[in-house]
Length: 158
Image (cartoon, rainbow, N blue to C red; front, side, top):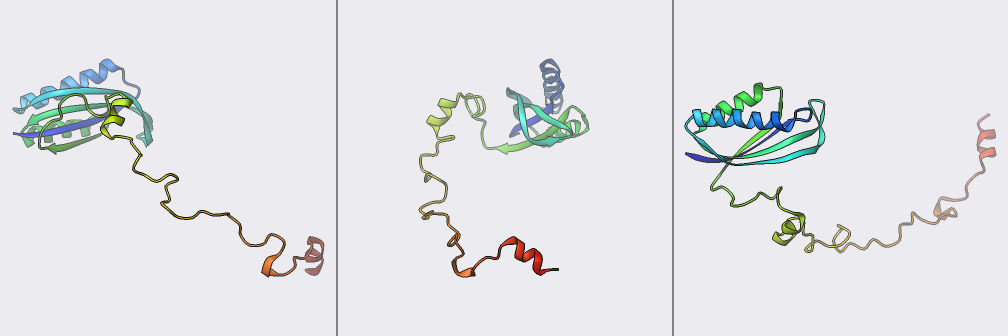
């Protein structure tokens, strides 16, 4: 059987108990299909980058699954039909991660592992490009010639 990581987003107006009920329902589908569900992580209610089906937030849940492809297809079919599930994604992996996922680790632990560490990036984000002064030519007219006062420009068009 293949190994999968599955993440789904549930609507923001559900309670945590309803999200847990969804997880139990999908666990039942996987076990009925001959598979098993390992780690389940509830990442909580998080803001979405953009609105999805009129929702600005969603409950994120990660599941580690060992199952045949048919069981995964049935679970995804059920999630596609459910109005409570906004989005889902299943990825086939070589092996499941040990311990907590990157989303569940504390910020300090992530920086020790290299997540969010920007030490190798140049300051400013533009490499070694010289930014110099930001002038757009001489402000007193430069090579464009003298400027006409507004009264003359308005009177010349009449």
